[in-house]
Image 1 (cartoon, rainbow, N blue to C red):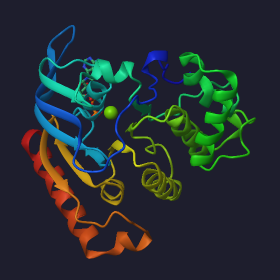
Image 2 (image 1 turned 180 degrees about the vertical axis):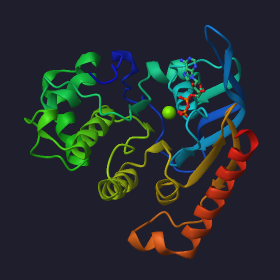
Image 3 (image 1 turned 90 degrees about the vertical axis):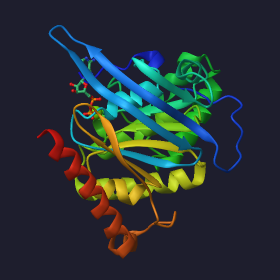
Length: 281
Ligand code: ADP
Ligand code: MG
């Protein structure tokens, strides 16, 4: 059995968040630290993190395993609570954002229920929200269309490839049309070709829907290809060591990967990661 998804972890419809462009802060993190209390000793997962994410940004968190990427995302999702400092989502508390169903959460594993069809997996959050059946069906249809899975509604997860299963879990996160999408290494388990294809699909979805995306990855090329902003973190305790506002044009294609600008950004990310590693390891 894969990681169990708590029902109330599963996101919702953003209510009344204005659809205007411009530098409107969706996430504002100020002097944030988070210490886990464990049986033997406290673990400082995040230390003094400051970060602003604006509406329409595609932001990647990149850093070594254990540097606090998931913890930071879970703070935004109100699944962890800071020990010090503040996190604001849409100008309010993460708890309010969770109640407003302001974000959709995509986990590394697709976390689909094997006994539910593709459509009924996507409908699950809508069912929990108590939407009328016809609405559920229409929204599931639209979300599956967004991820290119029209025609697969009646299939079961085990009949699909890993990449297709992850697209179903993205459709589920999109089903209630949240403005903010939180994606924790969603393509980490996929082969590189599939990952590249899903990266392109995700970019076209992002362009079509104007969502704000926070994306965790281990892959430098994935971070550089997708992001408008790259947040480089170092381990023990997780700190932000560099934030790169990408100079790449928003429209990206296979040629982007060969451009000098792409190589320059990738170089800077690699340097940042090396510097972060050097401190402790
Ligand atoms: P990442 O996603 O970058 O790999 P995490 O945010 O999962 O890192 O973890 C950051 C640090 O906090 C790690 O040292 C991890 O072992 C620790 N950690 C994560 N969750 C917990 C928890 N619930 N209790 C104690 N320590 C935790
Ligand atoms: Mg993680």
